[in-house]
Image (cartoon, one colour):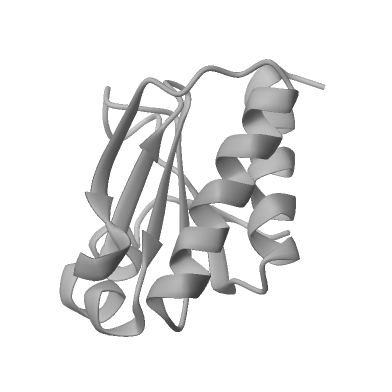
Length: 113
């Protein structure tokens, strides 16, 4: 299994363990040089978003993957976790609708988990 695939599996499982809603994986590597994959998920409250962030960070650290950058705060309804090859966006429902990454990147490959 390739590194990116393992990272996706770990992060998606960690999000699902915290009951994330509408988890989507987008293969954006051919459309941008920023990263290869976006993982997008929704949490229904500040507490759930915090738990999702903590769950991903812990699972990725346990697997030996280093966090490059963490942006945003759960109180603002959006947190970004950059792991070089994948970038994880965790949103409140309102912020997910506002940023609309699902439709902005609609022309890239969607990967189902």
